Image (cartoon, rainbow, N blue to C red; front, side, top):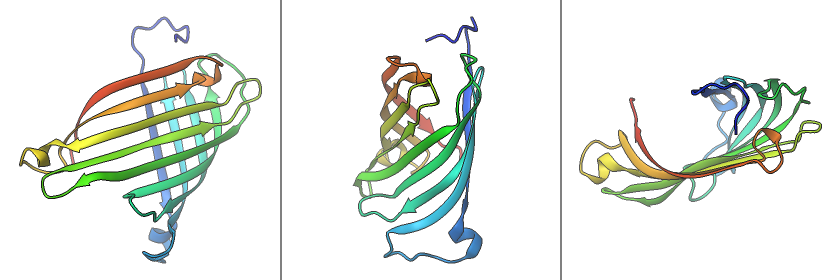
Length: 181
């Protein structure tokens, strides 16, 4: 889908941060409570023709079989739209997870991902962005340093992309990740 810019290259990035109730106050919910933490978060999504701001609460859950599982509910506002539409502020519900599939001394294989539900914005349709991944710690599997190189695949579904009904990205791709930390 083109936005009409005629450019051969585009850029896109996101910056999201959250303030943790537990870290700010020093009060813990405890390991046996279903809620791990409550956060106030916000983010900016920026691209050639896109500028979106969001703010709202996020709950981090203590769920069995998950390394983490979070649900955030944000006020979502398009400050710049690729089609120059005047869009209403709406909501975004974001679920993020990570869960082990196989974890032992030799193999660390896990699934992680997110799903965003973005509400309609006046005449613009609601959107769903879903990106589950399966990753293998390649360094650990080959007897090297754990946590540096990951091999995996992901599926990306962007339904009603940019709120345009019937426009959909549907991509399955391999990935190689190098962690600089």
